[in-house]
Length: 508
Image 1 (cartoon, helix red, strand yellow):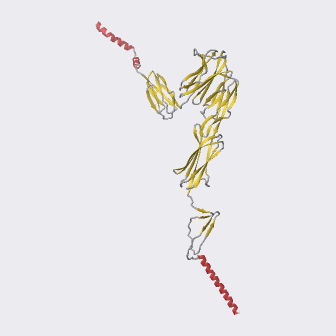
Image 2 (cartoon, one colour):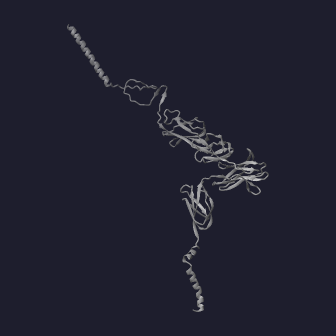
Image 3 (tube, helix red, strand yellow):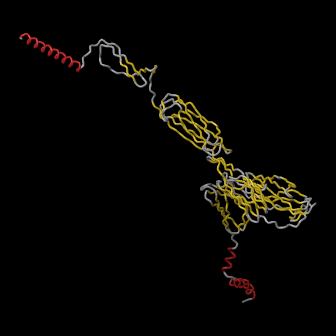
């Protein structure tokens, strides 16, 4: 083999040797590793009614579905944005965000009505010059005192924060900042304070948010003193008698808290504290609200937690209805083309006075005879009457219905209804004069020569009928003919007997 040929074959032999050393599987792996990786990102919803359409915008691609899942296939690894719009009045949580895609993953989405959830951190003091949180303050130094507030709800809200610093039971300073707070956002709300006197200050924070949300927190500010551990105990108020999810409130030693659960808890050191329980407004069928059996009291904390049971009693406004006709002897029967008076009585059988609304409808076929509405107020066991004219215009039955409502801040709430059906009878035509009544009824009397007057007397009516005179021969009835025959025969017998007696006397 020549030198030139060997030089040409050398690279080929080197390639064959390398290829024989590297496994075929490794070459396949290298080839496959160059392909892009795709992963499924599945959004799973809960809270929507079955069959409701919803959508997801994932990295610019929008998909809709009426099932509870929407799946995208995307290349990874990647960091992609998504957003989910509201469905009617239901808001998704989360409504937007980012997903790091390096494997198949699931994003859970919960739909719910708008709500606000306020969470408070611990009230604290920060040195104004550095922003550092401090536990021991000094007189003459300026601090930023406040609290971290977070909205864990799914809708924006407006928060009002009352921050008060108290020393020996006396308010030293108090501010009330106001700020909007977006869903999922948090903020530190505070104010600048320069203490002028050493002591242990009580820093109290009460946050109010729409709608009807109150949260409280407190801590101690040590000025010129080393912080010491002050033991606090739970004072828990437990309600009974409210419908599930109803908001109620407790004012404990000047701190107001509300909750939709059945418990409200405060923290307190040893001592005696005042509390007040608020009334609860509630608009439901017949229920105007609830009142606590004990609206105010005192609770003593002495080395252990305390539980206070609050019993709520329902306030019931129950306007019941009765219908009747004033000038009818039969409760469900009336005469056509006649005027009546309809009486509607409303009686409050509840345990609370209230304001009501009354609707009265009367229909005869397609005609509306009465359509009236009234506002009224009733005390406990009180009754109010409404009298209306009722004109019956045809022979069809009359249907009368009355509805009662309770007037509440949320509107009119239906309470009771009642209905009667009146049967319409044909009207009897008659003419009355004093105690005599002439009835248009025809009777064929027997033919007679004489004028006949007949008088019929009933318990309340005397009827006199005088037929006209007519010259017609009267045909005797069979009874009159037989009597005449018997009379003639009797006279003949008497004459015969007398004749026989006379004959016998002459012979003698």
